[in-house]
Image 1 (cartoon, helix red, strand yellow):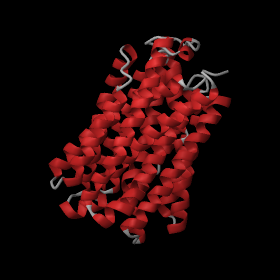
Image 2 (cartoon, one colour):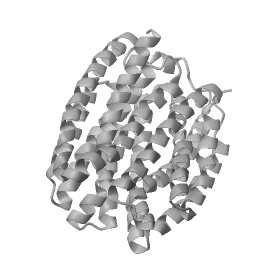
Image 3 (cartoon, helix red, strand yellow):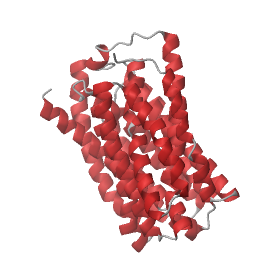
Image 4 (tube, rainbow, N blue to C red):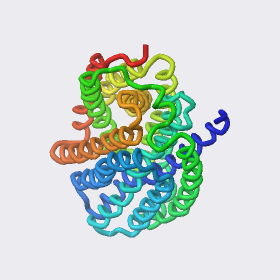
Length: 390
């Protein structure tokens, strides 16, 4: 495959990820609106996030495992149809139960997209697996960044019913994913159904004990990163409104800045990981973000925004490095590993959101930000990861 064709595929899969995650981002972005209109508590807000992310986290490893054995290229487009259904339900949901049902549909759609799209990015990587994974994930981060802006521009002025306007973009996403599925089908026929040529060339030299220990360390790192990120993504708007008196629309733009910074961090992390090794990126990413996280709850408005951007940029650079590192631990299982780690990320984020919502009800949203600031310090366990790249 020539470089131009590979880049074209990567950009298309990134676009599909962008649209999928923009739809996902609509859910937390409308929390202030539905909290007021439906009289929800912070605990119920956390349960909504938990429902959405648990449907993804429980299904993704199973979808990934199945796709490793029996690839279904056009499953990408089918998964987007679930997301479309969830958006339409969300546009007229007037009860807590209907909200939960709609976000569950959106979660199922996401559970199909992530493991299969990650395999597509791997096939189109040309060996630069970290950069390919970053390009794929940047689409998701940009989509999550534009979700709050779209809500501020469309949903806040026109009401919850205007969410159905996103259905037109969902149709575009189905078309994009169907085109990717056509290309993916040709690659399966060319390279075989179970492994891409890059997985075959990169068998792991580690013992089983080392692999298990490394996976446990990655689990701790994912816990640290995703619990902290869940708090920022779901409650930063409430924090800005509560502490600084910002409007709902203004708080959405702060969240947008944070999410854009995570996209930039992903790109940097992928390039550095390919050049110097994933372990060094993980070191700097998680542990290196702790000073910014610890200072953030005690700053004025300007510095809070600056530190939120810095912590988003630094911490997000770990995701592609962690995912590629894990696939190199167990080569030939890209779908299962991608599904497990994306699912773990969503599941931990959902649990963290529910826990922090309950804690905010019991104390305050500012106390939650002070408490979670210590989570990035767990990045110290990166020391125990074995070196894969010499």
